[in-house]
Length: 237
Image (cartoon, rainbow, N blue to C red):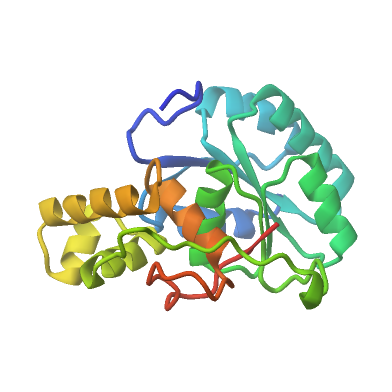
């Protein structure tokens, strides 16, 4: 990976967690560390420490709580994006106000989720943000349904096999090759072969890109990748 802040451990997404309440920080650490392929690398309790810790911890993504001190938080997000443009920022918020969502996105937030989000949605949002996508919690309606843009159809020229669809479902849940093999009762080498086939058929650069392609196509009736039986995904902006 060419990004200057790329993970030292190949395949692991390093996540910095920025939240005020200790109980929230502990909960986020557990959510991230229990998600396959992700690792918490710091939990600064003060906004002013965020930039320094990003420089030393070298995360791939920052998850930031956006509560009462929204203005100060967004100023930190702007500084992060200006100094570390490769670091993806995902916000956990309490407001469903479309104006607040738009303000956060304009500041550089690439994932906007509610504080009661699930570990799966948080993992998806982090992967999508790293892949350059902007996603919003499905609980939030930013536009009227009639005005919502349709997702780009995901129709591989060569359809995925049933087993490849099974593997893709596991990728969407953030599972490692080893865990996918255990879940599907196949060898890790076989999983790797299926992943390579999936990336080739979807035209994806890597696993994160494949996940983001599926996320962006959700809601499109034309999508035939076979991955839509999984849990609901965040809405793409």
